[in-house]
Image (cartoon, rainbow, N blue to C red; front, side, top):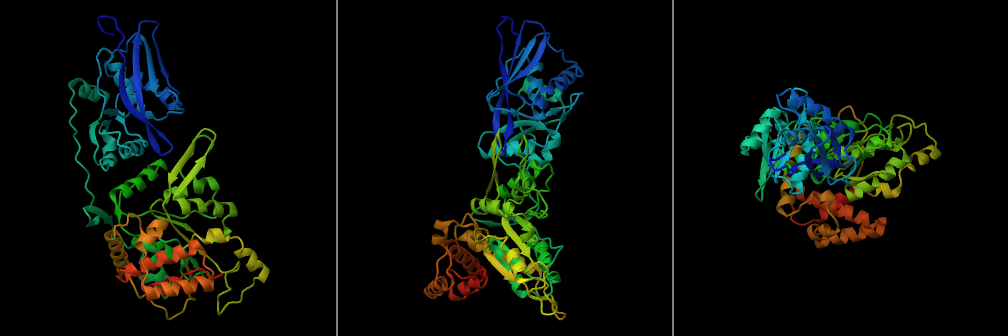
Length: 511
């Protein structure tokens, strides 16, 4: 309270997550003469309501006198429901500790959970919140726990004041010491610079393609799928190397720029895991017994992130594809088309980014021996038909590259390393970026296909002939053009040649 008994309304900025996007919350405080009380209003969640006890203890154990007044904390806007997060503790405590002062810090955000002794602790929500605020252009400077700097320093263009205790935060506000004390993080990964932008990648090949014996067609298809991030299906007998190839795909995927690495880390934080911030695209492989909620995300109250969104900018692998429930496969059509997962609940509607490379493997029949030259297939024609009918044409139409695996031969040898394949992937990546593409070939939209997938005259004739002969759909034609564009980039061709389009047609689905 001021000497003239006017009520001072102080405020600090904080934020809460609404799905994956942060909403700015202004924490306001008033102190009035009445029976002493302490209340938090503004549709605060239970973890914010519990902050009252943490704040009281933190102030009293650090020799601050808790004011014998009616204290009202308001979280504005008040109509945003279910505000949550223990990181509101510090802003509430600062408003109470400095109740006799005027706080005028419009640009400053304050985040931190309080221990009972006044220590400021990290919260798993801080990284996705601050990254989202930065993406929206809403944050420039913030007081944060020192423990969080290891992760937050990856976020550029935001100044951080790292503090360890409540008393240190009070000193910062009282002295107006707003000088950021954290240097910008620098990545240790290898990078290439194109058009004044850095793209990072790792050279780590623990699982090497040299271990894959034979399967030259599948390895060539793996190169093409990786270079353009094309959806990719392998069909073959058990033990022919389908899963073995998928395990080696992660290390040969295209480079990432900083914003992509941060978006991957953001999804990992939302899943409760601590990212390593390496320039390595994620790979997720849910089992066919996984629930719909675990794959797409969901929950009764708060919609949590699922496997599809966790594979953002990386690989989602479905092994034994026909064993997945039909409702999951059909629901997967939306993220494959729109690059997003939409979750609708009574209290909220949430959209997660899900720009994925979908990779899948399946046997040719229930027993797996249909294509074998040495083993007899035990399946009836009806069983084979029923097995393959689990996959609808609209779903399969969203997969670009189809490969039938070769049968394993004793004389097969490894003939190419992951290092060699990765060099070709990077070469194709550079060609795509030098052409001005924002998206890789496998993710081009209709307008971008017309702009970047230029066919030579002989290639146009081959494609037109294929359209008439095979009855290709509009999506199928676009898919062939995108694959051919990637093949042309690998072959260092400016336009798509006859040879490029013929190879692209060899990877189409046989009906």
